[in-house]
Length: 388
Image (cartoon, rainbow, N blue to C red; front, side, top):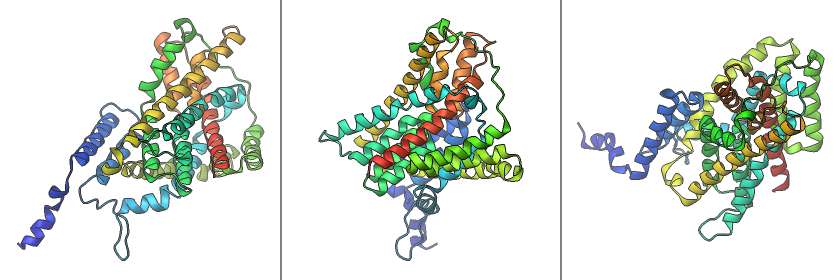
């Protein structure tokens, strides 16, 4: 055998670095958490594989196209599906088709809980701007906006806003760190949120039962709501139209009752395909030489602060509603305002069931959960409009 061929076969060994080994270890941990612990496997398994493929020594999966040299397949996924916002918009379409707005429409006050949870966006924005004044960081205002949107805990919105910010001046490393941080924290919702909720609520508050007997929402109302929302968004927050528009379009497919095939495709085939592409492409942004930096660590730290703050803000408003309603509102449902649909709502239900197995809060939590998704898209549109 030609020695040149042998050298080519084993070339990967000589180019491997300690940082690559570290990233491969992270990939293995994420895959283990997804498969072994069943922690949001739809996210963690594809992300883990994406990280693994991106950190193999020769980078065959992520190499950029240069001249006549063809790039790696993940390069094209990133360049033409993720970075331009296509995948996030398709995810929003699928989410809209999967989302039932009835819990939100039946209790409009839960819009406030979704809005309160966006407080994490402003905490992360201010924190990043403050770090930018330190010599060891190079954050600009666009970077701050990219990091801030983590506080909304809405993956597609985070990708969309961070990509737009990179196109007008945010650093490339910020985009990768923000996207991975957001999805990592979304997957870790069952670990992050319970301590915050317990810290801010009493056992008596956590045991409050909220009977589910919503007023019926007519089919006409369910059809009118997405149409009116698109129009109002276009008039008041035009930068949020792509996200809100696709979300509401997906919901209209679900509710109109005359396009079952399209609704089914958006809920199943389309959603499954874009979830695979989203996860593996997000993971591929975590390249070793870009990941192990002080700025990336800071983004992850700010992200967790934003997520905790968003959860706390929702719970505190829930406590206020509890007082004003004379004990009829369980403040835990405010934690679902961080979006992360439907993980945050499931956390609230699981915590309620631990305190009292007969307590069912899932549908109550879905109201602020859906409101949080809309609120995150609105917050993203506001950032895009204000920061040019």
